[in-house]
Length: 170
Image (cartoon, rainbow, N blue to C red; front, side):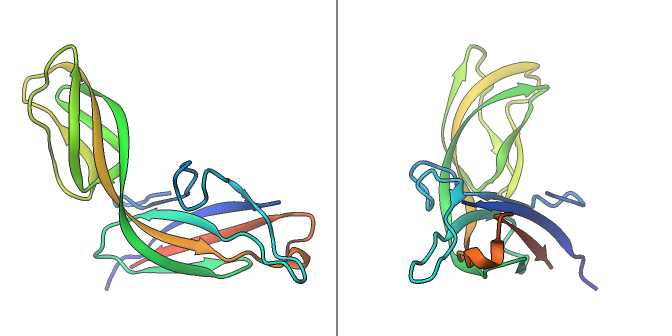
């Protein structure tokens, strides 16, 4: 019998359980699918609305089933996205905000923490043993599944303007 994990998000028009790194977020990157937008236009008669793209971070070994309170959730593609973060290592350990596929670069600020190690698909990252405290700016790739919520009709949304999305993973 397989376990079921859930995460959800709300998208404006007009989280992780059991140790599995499972998250979703509206793609608000300036160069992303939504071009920095976080609020979207619904469909009106004769005028299509905005598709709201979101990114899902979860291991490939899981299958995702999406649900939406209005509109339809459509899988677009899986792609690697670069993130740059400044991490603080305490007792040789730190965490990124997204699961790591690969590290493109690192720059130590002050104390040199040495080589970085991690398990692919996790957020945990380690520097050299025995390092009590260190700071590094890293550039890394994270694998995201890209989905979009098709714009629901304004008549369906009424004055509320919110759509709930539920993602189940097995």
